[in-house]
Figure 1 (cartoon, rainbow, N blue to C red):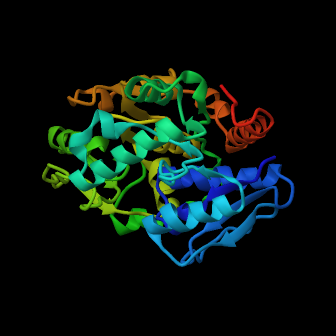
Figure 2 (figure 1 turned 180 degrees about the vertical axis):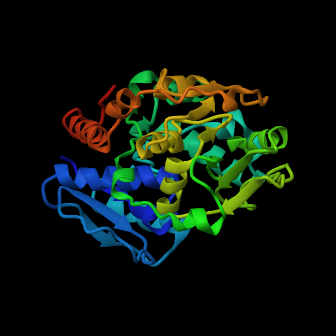
Length: 353
């Protein structure tokens, strides 16, 4: 295989959905490849690097952040006569290599972003869709959206989905219940980054409509990125618990009355499948194409623009096994490894459906 060098900047970032994707796929790839068959380049500030058995880890350059990603990293890749693998939306401008674009909400919901962020990501995505050797995405819905908004030929895009098995390695931390005076089975729970697209205003409206119930929302917001903030006041029966640990999140998912995910737009939607794997069987997600693709008939669907009575009489008798069986990091890593191998044998052209 032509040398593939993974962009390891994600190892310096807070773990959200895209970083989780990169971490889990890289960890599973490590079990598939021969020693030193793959390499991961990391910035000099990376200090919490997983113990890979077969993937070679190399600290590269003296720059940091975006400068590292667009100067130090591609220079190193070129010097090694290699191809970069970028799993978190962002790839070097001068040589994007293989890139995973998780969603195109910058096209669909531009009002959610600051002008500076929007300009930067529009340039990145335009460059990647025109020049990347291969594009990866996480759902058939997201693939259709990339084709729709960027005119990319379908054969250039491979679907390699998210999964949930990382949640099996996480134990519960019930101190989060005591900290916020929560009773098992007596609260609704929502978790995401508190950006406008995640629609936490819907949660607030639900809390106002049902003041006798407790609503818990976990997540943080980056004011430098999202232009208008949350856009709602927090009702007394809605608790914003901030950025929480995985152990705390799994506890709240397991013990909530229902998990709520009224997002406007997603490429996949990782929190609901984490909630399914944690044992929650009363899950409400937006009635959108991608949610139907991922979850089928194993969740409740709600209208993201209006709050109805759905959450008070949801079906909690779903069998999650059919959904969970479709997705695994091991399966996704095998798809990715096959793609990399076929690209090498076909001089850069390959398709994994």
